[in-house]
Image (cartoon, rainbow, N blue to C red):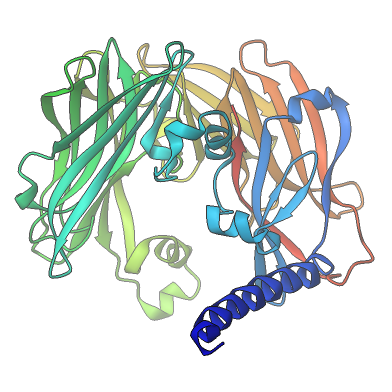
Length: 426
């Protein structure tokens, strides 16, 4: 019996751990609010691909929650297997893991690393090789699945000049005419973060020959040694898309230190501007650049004045060669579409919603549709979250509804719900 005591102890610990996990999940499930979509108009079929990722809670304690038309899923309620698999996966990644199980084995779950069209699913990530806790080499890990033949082409190549970088991450992946293009954000050796020195490189691979054909420096910002300002360089939109896009858009923000007189600042609106910029800085210039995946050319966008003023504050979605800016006006929520190639505003659409100032609305354009989630007040001055889905071309309203709580008598009576993201499955 003594020979088995270690095995018995290990099994007991495992059973106790799993049992404790499930008990905690069951207890937690009884105290969190449930949500559903209350239909106002349109077809509820439009909700099938929509997931609202949010945080819900009270007294400063919040839980991550995913809300669909069918369920309210709290991450803390995930089963043990779901927890191990990663309950914070996007809806798209979950679909990939269900539909392309073999292809997805061992892959990272960062959405920036994926590309999909009707015939191809591609993945590109960068493996870091370490020595003494410092990155010494970066290696491309690329797989391209042909959906028709179910064959996968794999590419593993060293990143050129790895020794010159201390950080390298994937920002976007595109497949065009048999070429796979990987957009990367790079910090050269000697830089501490993206505020110090940042470069955007595009690596182009020929899928058939498995060779790296070209490396382009899309844009770079030098180190700023005078200490009086800084420049930020980042993708225009925070959440990348897996769909085919003609352009990769980059935002360059120039910041300067703002000095506010204490007496004047108490009543001056510039104090608010300082608080909205990082580290007591204020934005002095915002520039947009568009990299064309087909031609490899980069151009600076000359936006109309009204859009230039919005670009650093409006919610933005990029789709099919256009930039969609969601702006709050006195008339309601306004969506302005700017066509990049034609360099003109192509449409304006206003929704009769007076939003709550401190809660920003969200926009996502996908599948030729526009999805909007916005916090506003109803006729009784009660806060609610309104969901709007409209057709992109005809501007027809396809669905309107309200995200409402379905269990008002549960434990959390003074809960707050904060929307973080709109997630579209397809």
